[in-house]
Length: 122
Image 1 (tube, helix red, strand yellow):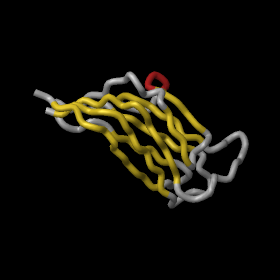
Image 2: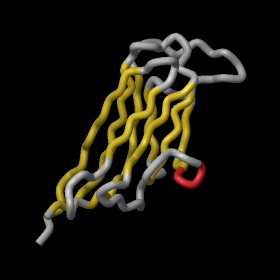
Image 3: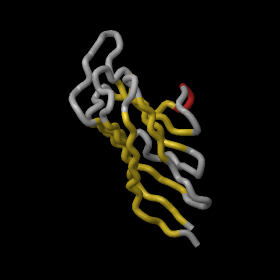
């Protein structure tokens, strides 16, 4: 019989070459996630804009980051949240991915993603 628990899982990564991809998802057999929101943040200051390459964080849900798994995006790379993930169910092997790109001047800074909602565990 499975139990329903609160979900608040986070992951961090270090920006290098003005980019970083971080991901998290259910890892254990029988674990199922029901996310309600995804929050992203980055330490430091707003990256230097260099049009047309403005800093952006794109969110994806699936096995990899591609057009078919795109969920949402924001230019507010220092802190933003999205509820677009609400209603999606994640099984082991599936991921929530945050791809920070064009982070000019942010090398060495830390990017963070937090997934919140509920999860079922065996």
